[in-house]
Image (cartoon, rainbow, N blue to C red; front, side, top):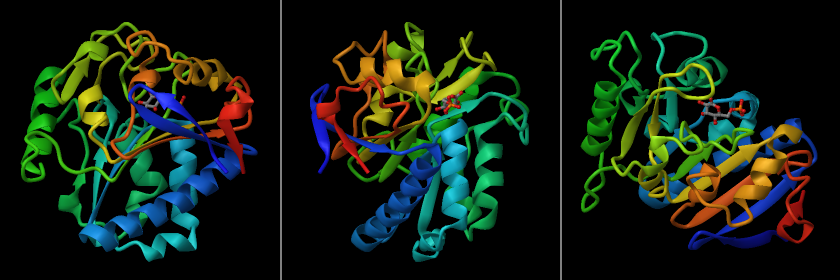
Length: 264
Ligand SMILES: O=C1O[C@H](COP(=O)(O)O)[C@@H](O)[C@H](O)[C@H]1O
């Protein structure tokens, strides 16, 4: 049984796992299943990755899970929800983290892996140009009839203690942005310069999964699930077209009203 409640104009399901380890294992298994389902129904799958501590644990869990071999990785597109605007290979880039934890071990087709530009990339240290470049790459892969972004089967999001998601921070200009991708300057969390998908792009995904572990995320989860505004609480502003999942460990879910939680 799952607890559910309205979030914006959709519904969110909150599922709680015992601890961060179990959360990572469960999300990894769920992800493999969802990618297999997507491939069965439309021949391919597209996954949007996030950064952060829980994300790394999920990627490692998926890498060692037997379920990973059920996915045809040659028919998976990998995108990123946000990136720290640093040189290629920098250990703080979300791309570097994902490659080391999972992607390097998978038989992905390189042309189907779509990292956000690095600060030593073709646009140099110009995050606005890099954001525009990524928007163009998304538009180039857009599904027919949908002008600006591809089909995303699952879009993963971490949750900051301040309730930021991707690199949309509370009260920052990115929270108002309507273009598909935006540059972020002056991020309250280092590094200060970033690139992020915006609300309209995130909310075009079929499924949005918010994953969080630890007591530091408890207040953010409560606020986001209590009808807060998305400018003040960015996590309150995201939802999938078909499904919005909050996948938490017990500590992160501690302030979510018990009636909304389903404990695994
Ligand atoms: O900087 C970032 O932080 C958030 C959350 O990270 P966590 O370590 O607190 O789980 C992450 O979702 C985002 O992708 C990343 O750029």
